[in-house]
Length: 257
Length: 306
Image (cartoon, rainbow over all chains, first blue to last red; front, side, top):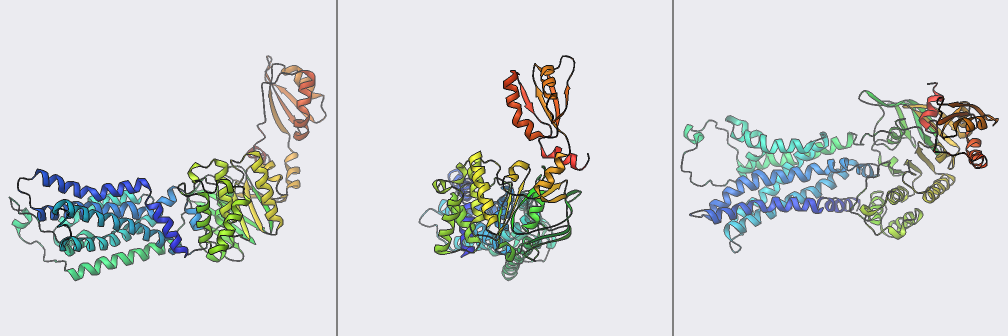
């Protein structure tokens, strides 16, 4: 009962107009890009457009940013607005407070990416052909990705004062650079596992990618089984770690008393 | 009910509370000290928001940090004005009641009663974002009261309240103390807490300076002369007149062309009550009137011999 009420209040907090606007912009951005392609391309191939935008914009940007924005807010927003004191002085185990807030952040993140995928499909394929197997698969993988990234940023939020900065650096630095590195480095990127579950066929390139020209540098392959295992393990273990940290650390803002 | 045993709390190199030992029982106790004395740190320790760096803190015989068994019996009203601005007062108090384990009709009854108790019933359906400072203060007190805790901790609860509301809240807190609850109130204004309780804990620079009846503390304070600065074009004539008063120790002018008088007295309250009549009788023109010793900081500086 207490958890449900806290979840409801947290969800309401997550869906404030300003955040809702940010979520709407994030969700609609891939569709906008697809529409631009549709209008500008000489020979438009809907599946190529969907694949390219889903891979680059939806998975590579919207998913990570939505997780950063919503999941770091679970703790930091309460600390910054100094309302955390009301939650931490109530007779509720701290891990339950955190999990209730995290659940609301997950709903917001998953909602943003799911809507983003559907609107992108409508923009790429048209409203009648939008519900296709790759779209449904992508939504499933995006939900799993929301949980994995969500737990990562939740954990970071329980540890750092400025988790948003970490999140942005992670999204645009680590997740962009690491999958491109040779060898087994891609095993350190969550995006590599998501792409293994939801591979998007790249459009035929006019020139050959240098990595293809050089041939396979690494024999390390992420199988679907490994991807599921790693993403689920990350989602669960980091959520548990965040709960443990949140139960032990002090979050009372220091003030001049 | 509350026991601090050699409790210290450091924030890196800065000390918040230094080697405090004290016991606080039932009734209303005022935690008094100037800004930066360590009052809020002490309250955070006893409400389980932070842990002591050294020593122990016990509330109801248990360590309070993140302890639901302690928090179930504790109500806390923080100093910060921060609230959930997009909720109504009633929604906020209801959420806090729910988090304290209240459900159904009992919850509704207690929410209504606590809101009524702080005089917020007419405004409880309005968004907190539109509340005045005093209304925010009242709704914060309501959420602290809603689960009828055995221990009520309020950090500067009279801040932002108008005189009528101050009186009402003071009466409410005194009443809660009289009911046998343990009520701990922090303040940096001596006369404000004197109207509520005789039982005072004095803090200064993180240390506990004194604990006990306010009369004894008043006597300590009254041993030191109290300075009052009066700005007037009639400085010489006023100084002469004030020196005739038996409780005025000295009257010092600020130069040959004096425009102000600094008076020292051991009976400030008598001085303040009689001064307006003197001004009216002898037709003095007063431009400004203040006391550098009216702040608690100055009082504590005297007490520590600074």
